[in-house]
Length: 599
Ligand SMILES: [Zn+2]
Image (cartoon, rainbow, N blue to C red):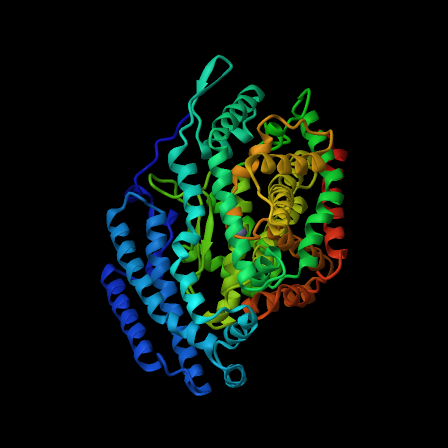
């Protein structure tokens, strides 16, 4: 039954997050904005054209750090307020005002980066040696030096930024604004269809006829946009290729991995091993899904269904607190305190209301706690989502405390480790609690596969495998028309699922659905993060305290370490295939246990 959503103003305050931790009122926001404008113009007056001594550079780093903190608070405040209620005109006005000041300020302080880029190597080295804030920021300036172009070319590229980013915008506009899905028919009834309706509901629909008819109707519609989407995507990857050549990288993949501080070997290993070694386990899981749901055959349209669709454990927000705090208290008293604070100081927006953004995220303005957006449905699966987002909160609480605002940004390769480890620890805790309740235990195990591992190790990894093939062609200077993209995608699916899953017509269009392709190499990194998380979780269960202490230090390191160093601090070696192979075995063992319990 369709639920009538409340207006934001009617939602009980205890279900909402508290943005007054950032600014108490509109007046306070405006005076902070004035202060921010002043800091921006002061920086310009004091340092523009003057970054010629190590002392000046370090003073400027200090100011840039403050500037970042202020920008971070302002930006988050207006974004957060809009995200919970898109119908709130006042919040939109504040957002527009802050964002226009913000982009003006950003362009004003851009002289810092360009002057540092132009400064002699020795000067930057001297500044690094005496830096108290922003040491890693300066080291990155050095790291990028060999790939920097002349000031005129850099300026030309910067000026073309809008054009360079156009493919992503065109893709999103066509997907979210242009495509109109017609109703489709199944079981003699008409059903409405839409992009998120399909991806959030129909893919999980238990009625097989409705589910497969939805897939068919969805695929037919997006196929009408196939050539335009391929052209837009092709222009995006060719631009990346051009930039990688201008900046003298060996290949477009090397260019994209450079920013993440990840080697080609680490990247390739993640894709190759999962494609080969995880596939047999997942085919078995597909078989179990087929049996459990009494299907004649398993098709591509059926892969997201639940193993036990009749069983959907419920949990209230109050009870979730007990689960979260008990389940994650293995991380030590400090972490437990952070979790209690999250509930007490209203870090989480649980509400469901008109105009609220869907999905979930965690924003962590510097040293101000976190803001977690979700839509609580009283389902046990919400506990996993909350544990995940609180993992991001715990990460940024730890590194925000230990590092300057210039050093809190972490590589994609590790960013999902602190969040997914919480999902795994919650699962372990619930398994422990399940006692003799086999059905509940099987539900937890199946959730680990269908949520945690499927999402990170299958969905995104298959995208990554496809993406790598596309870039290989682009590197060779070959074209990537729609037919080629379809073929690459279908081959990846065939390789992974073998004969176990019938590749329904339309599966080859899956490449049209993912915005990640416009964000560089994002897709593969989910499984990289979760590999680290699985290994650390196993270490914590086995070794207890010493492993927890290592993990806490790792979380505090923020952007000051590379992904390899991050993993190493946590006791995981990601320079060989051992950690990944062990993680794949672990996934296999969960599926084996589901099979033993029976479907
Ligand atoms: Zn996350």
